[in-house]
Image (cartoon, helix red, strand yellow):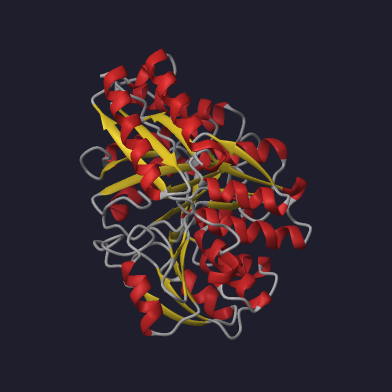
Length: 452
C-alpha cells in the first residue's frame, strides 16, 4: 500500500477512497500521536475543524469531529472557511490541532483531509507517518484507550472565526483599496463569503462571480484553473483587475484590466518589490520553485533581489522560508506565502496585497506586472518511460547538454520525473516560442530513446 499522505494531506474520491471510516480513524490516530508527542501535556486538547463547501465535506466533517471528540479532544467547528483561515485560527485560538477538509482545485467528487500542528503549521512528515501507522494498526483491530465521562471531547460551533479571519486580513494591508473596481472569482469555494467581504471592507468596489456554492459546483469551469469567465467579467465591468481563487482559496491568480493573465511568478515579482520598499523583504530574498519562469529569475536579478529555488511544491518553498527566515515565497500556480502573516499560501491575502500595490502606486496591474517578461515555456509529458533513470542516463545527459548550448543564457532546460505517474516532464524555455518547441520536441524524443 502506498503512503496515504501526499504533499498536501490525504486526498481521494470522497466515499470511495476517502470514506467516513477513514476520516474518523485518521482523526483518532492524529489525537493519539500528538498526545504521545507531548502536545497535549498538562491541558485538555482542542482542535479547529473547517471545510470547503463540497457536499461530501458535510459527512466527512461529522466523522472527523466524532473521531476527535471520542479521543478526548474539544472541537471548535468553524464551518466553511479557506484553508489559510483554518491555519490562522488554529494559531490564534491556541489550538493543539487544526483540520481542513478540502481537495483544493480538484473536481467536486474528490475531497481531502489536511492536519495543522499547533500554531497553524503543517505537520512534520514523521508525525504524518506515525499517524498513518497508528491508523493502520487501529484499522486492523488493535484497541485504543477511549476516554469516558468528562474525559470525552466537547463540540462547539465557532462562528466568530469568520470575523476574526477578516480582521486579520485587513490588519495586514499597508493601505486601503479605495477607487479600485475588482472582480473576484471565488470558484464556488471556501472563500465565497470572506473574500468579497474583506475586499469590500478594504474600500474596493467588488463584483463577484463563482460565489454561489451549492456543494456540487466547486471549481466547475471557474476559479484559478479556468480564467476565461474572469477575463470576460473584467472586460464587461471595466474593472481595474480580477482575482481568482481555487476551491480552498490558498491560491491567487489575477487578470489585468486588458484581460491578460498575471500568474504566480508575476505576482511574486510585484510583491517582492513592494515589500523591499517597506523593508519587509528579509535578506532581499524571494523563494520559488525550479518551475518558475526564467523571466522571473531575470527580473529579480535586475532588481537586485536574490532568488532561492526549491523542488516543485509549496511545501518545499515553505520549508526553505522557515529554515532561513525568508518573508516571501511561492509558485507559478499562485501559491504565495507571506510568512510574517500566514503559515501557508493565502489567496485572499495575496489578492489584497496585490490590489493594495495597485492602489498605492496608482499604476495599473499590467504596468506593475511588466517588471517581469514571461519567456515562452513549453512543457511535454513523456509517458511510459523509466523515470528512475533521468539522472543517470549518459545518452540523455548528452542531449540536455546540447540543448543548453543551443539556448545559451536566454533559455533553460528542466527534466523532471513525475512523482505520481510513469512519465518524465520536459520543460524548455527560450526567448522564441518556435525555438522552445523545437528543443522540447527533440528532448522528448531523446527521453523516449534513452528511457523507453
